[in-house]
Image (cartoon, rainbow, N blue to C red; front, side):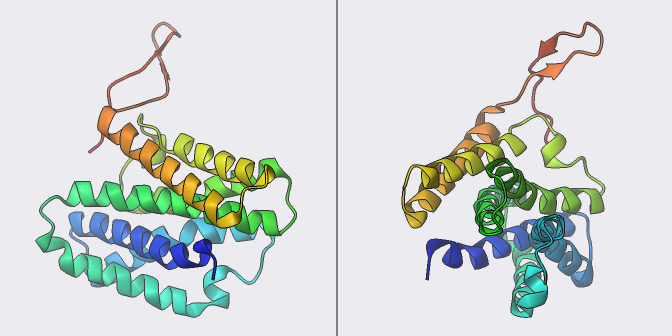
Length: 214
């Protein structure tokens, strides 16, 4: 069993939990948090597979992952009351899911023989789009569109993973390094509000505006 095989259940559990926590903050019932958790965990991979023509979709071929995702979402919702820092837990789980799914997406895309640029983009789609769908369904500005580094973290993680493989680094070591670097970068972006420059509509100049996370 490879490291990627081991982190996949962890990744879907983390993303399902992040979706459930947001649904709980929006006062959804258990069905609602199950839907949000499932979309968050499986949405990015489903979009990736459809774009690549990679059928059947992952959760269709392995329905046990669907059941596992729902169970993780319900568990997170039921435990939400004991989490005194929901926002912090949500951001940590989302960061873990972001980088883990990016690496998983790159690996699956590479297995189809796609060009290296497509591999990195598919990794980003896998990492980002589940959270994007989650935020849209919860009527919130998606994290990927806000001012702290998010999609950029996914891109760096994907490029690092693919680059390490290109230079002959073993898959497990490449996975571990990419996950560690990506997760650390995302936490630094949250802690210090690291951001890409934002164009000033008045002057056309670029400025880094302060973070406005809800």
